[in-house]
Image (cartoon, rainbow, N blue to C red; front, side, top):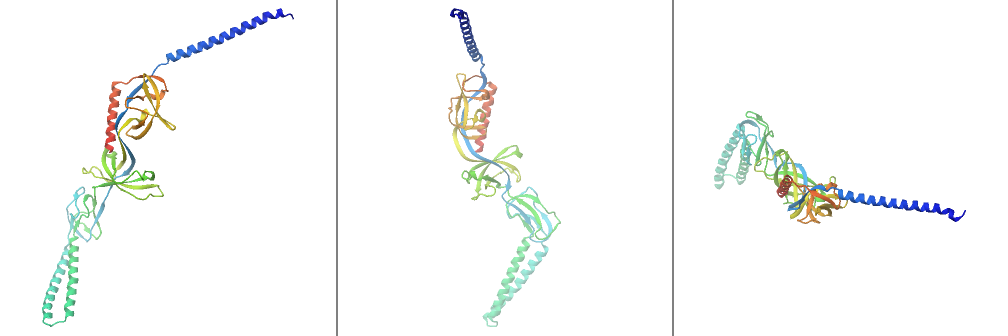
Length: 377
């Protein structure tokens, strides 16, 4: 075939190749224009913003335990007899040594009178024999025997008086009558229970704490008891004692929390949520816990600058009452995203939609949280 016969085919192939390349360029240009338009048309994400607050924040250990009485005594009858009089009722405050009830004690009274009469007779015999020994009419052995008999009878008389005193049933400790077991007219045997006395000052809770907290808890630290049965009322308390040993079976050590309640609202058996404050950072920079984004090994927050959200890593410290201490990565003047950060990326455009109601609510929440932090201490 002659060369000139191939020219039409070559020309056609060149035309087709040029057309394809021009089509590809047009498609790439259209895609680029479409991407730019979509970026321009991407709406700003609505968010609510806030600024960090400053205040004292506490490190504490929290646990639960029942409230117990530090002293609880069952008063028993030390002698038998009929109950003649009851002087106290359940709920009455008593002091150690106060008479709670009185038994008849008739038999004991007669026994005590008999020993006194015998002692008086022996005393007269002893005095008379002392005169006789001075005159040499009796031996020294006989007078010594009378002296021993008189000492023994004196001891018997004191024992009779003691037994008679037991007819008055007395309180062994200061406290409140929590239960009465007897009625007037009952005949009691020895060691029969009569009253239950419970000491309300102080009340205690025994908390078993993991051994990892051993170096942080010490006697004298402040604590707080929150009682749900009393509407969440808070009572100030103190760490009174810390056990020096760790239970190897549970890996815990026991601490004793003491709380005084002059109003007597606290009752033994109530369930308490206990917070023990072991450290404090004064005037710490704080943000709501919900504003932070936690990922493996990092914690970050979105900071808004010129309507653009920038993701910033922060270092955190103590936490408490819904707030987290920011150690580094955020300043007082930085505006961060408080609500709406879930759909943000670094560099996302945002529109701030804070309302007056939201601001008032945030302010009241911050005030409540600061108040909650302060009462823990």
